[in-house]
Image (cartoon, rainbow, N blue to C red; front, side):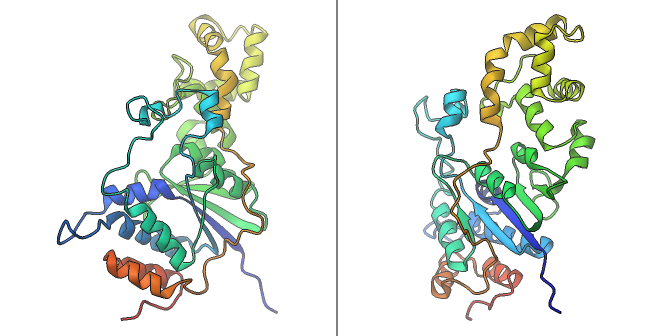
Length: 317
């Protein structure tokens, strides 16, 4: 009797990975007249490494169609303002040598046949959250990112974990599950991490947090009262454990606490296409285009590694 293979879904925070590739892979062009290729080569090699190590059956390269969504800016106008050019609405430019490589990565994914998904009005985090939330019939969901924001998706019951690449890269990522969050932060899971992040804030995203409340204090409060709503109820009820400067600071942050979850929480209801095909390709979608990209961007070796990892025919000699 034929046994069905358990499905294992891998979701890539693509920008996080190609930025890491750009800064981590040396630019070894023979001439500055050649197109930059280190992000292309590095990103391709990362996917090959991940597919080989974790053997997903399904893979989606998730994309930032909107890096600063309106619903988050409406909630907290300072969201990512430090990434704007001179106070305008224009995003700070990515490194000059990276910018032309991003559309090449898009083309390469399409040529191989790997699903890429972005949704207008949302960040890649939201696409990842929605796909993880809707991953029915999947034994494991691996979220690959260098962004701590996605720790909130760790969920042992739903078999969702985060492969966190900030320290060890894709070869030796931290495996973030509920036991990791308990050991690292003293909290019980992904939902608690998100609420801790609201209290703590995040200067890299322009989130002020509650003044004077850092990671440890935030975790203590979440553990004591169960969640952010519990903290606010205790504050309103005059809980004697909330006193002095801590009470004053929480009360002063009331308006912030009203809206911050809208910014911190990953959306789980992004309108992703019905019937999205997330399975690994069983054939190269466009062999001629893939060969052209590999040759033009000196990427034959990483493309060859990716094709081997996917068990697809190699590039022609």
